Image (cartoon, rainbow, N blue to C red; front, side, top):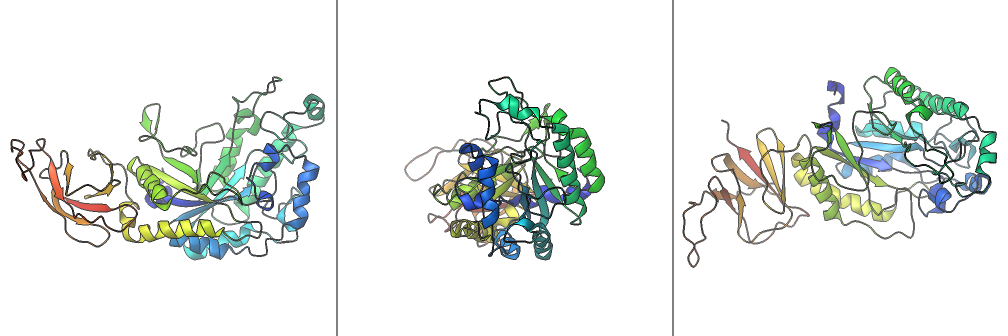
Length: 426
């Protein structure tokens, strides 16, 4: 990774924003696909997209207050609708009642807030007349797919795809991160039509175009060729991620409630403490967290999302230094805890608060000082003789090399308590 890209592994937490015509439907960003809606019927949303409450400065402020350091916005999702004044299509935000480019103000708001700028761009396009129908398409169940595909010129769509990427990476200054979505060569239609991958997108040429226009940009792995990082979605890796046995950068893409776009009736929201534990778990395994919000059709954030972000921010204000610039530690964390490490400081995140003591294997003689991170109150520690006999109020010995922390009975009133361990220099 270039020095100019080092911000990514330092910052660790970003906001994903899925916003488009599907926000008006308010029932999942794949509603066109799920409900098998025709292009003609779906286009009705174009006439009603006013987005009168769209204020990207509010988005930026919500991200920043949550402790997020970068934001990634869907410039175009699979529905094909462009959030900027693309010269290559009429299916765009400037042809809605909103009537204005949304990407320029978004980029400006992020820069004003000191946040890194990210774009999401769909390789898939259910609206474009030359995008051939396959298994990942609203028309997948039609009986005349072959006939519909006869007049479609996929190379012409590929030229359109590359052209829109050129517009996005030319017209808005420096862009820090590009999230392509997605390739699916393994998803073959029952009638034998193959899915789409690197040959369809001409991924090598597309990646070369991106690198030419934005030399310092970070690009994900969904072009069906290697990128700068891998992007597990809707699950948390169980350890550092590897490719051919070597560690790779990774970022977990997660939703607040299981939907990416605004989903009015979806109340399956993750708790704040769960999302914080997901973030901690990811950093402990050398990963980032990209946490999604889906603004409403008017452009404002769902109050439930605002509440979640505020809860994360409350924790990050006190515990951010266990996340920013931190990474996996080779020390063995006790059960129900996670370590992150930043230089000579080791951070013990306690998922299940113990009664009285925490025993840290292999840490004897390694710790100079310990404190709760939320209030900098000292945590005392000792090394218990491995041969000590348990009797009455005297605990038995711990394994050789263990360090025992004495923790308060009252659990700190934070989502996840963190103990900061200052390591000895050897």
